[in-house]
Length: 144
Image (tube, rainbow, N blue to C red; front, side, top):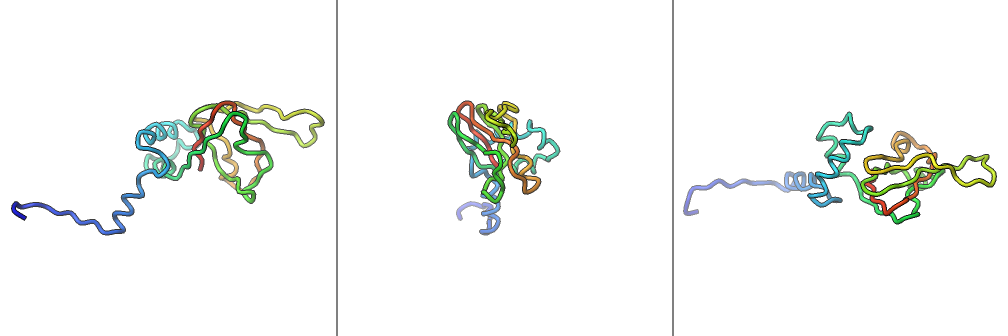
């Protein structure tokens, strides 16, 4: 070196750790928007900033078209359906069919919009879905 300088070293483990802190599923400009959205989700309110960041980094984005089933009533974790869905963009209907309902269609329970969620029961235990979630508009969900 021709001038005094400072050299920083970083071993492979530290490099991988720092690299893993960035989100793999969302572009940087989406991370801020998504972090704000997550902070507004009531079941996530008790989490610290670092915990919310870890949740954000674990999320996977899924897109659905109008009329697509996001989740179906009766599906279980054994069917591969155990995700929590947080609506990022769009709207979805929550519908339920009663087991003794003869000839009638499913009943609308709610309409979900950005910041609302579906599937928290599946995170808490091995429960079958109590209702279905159907996209009303083009829908983007963050899934955990």
